Image 1 (tube, helix red, strand yellow):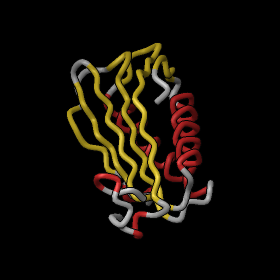
Image 2 (image 1 turned 45 degrees about the vertical axis):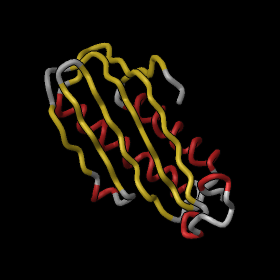
Image 3 (image 1 turned 180 degrees about the vertical axis):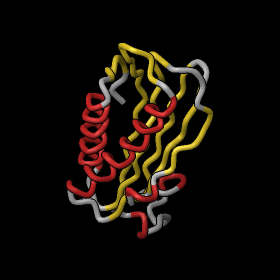
Image 4 (image 1 turned 120 degrees about the vertical axis):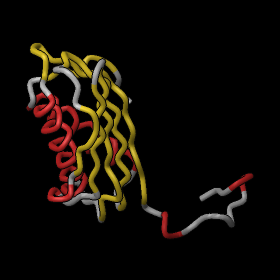
Length: 139
């Protein structure tokens, strides 16, 4: 690990093996999605990313978070891997026909490529499961 100014002596070995993947995209719906369904989507997405990471061999889900924003609402969701500990909070707003989705997954025990694969696969599956379409943004 290279520290500040290229100094290789700075770094915390506790952080070895921690990798992350972030993405930003736009998601659309054929029929506007109400607050309850957006909250269910956000919670399902957290569980899907955590589960995909564990299935890929992660030792720990350090943190997964998502931000959903549309014209009149904003939700944030997070988990540390336990499906019983997923939190979704924010301002619901009116039903939305599209929203911005930002996801960040920090995972211990997977390569960066494996974290990216688990995250992207889980996002694609969850978007499809809720009848939504990811219209732009790959990372």
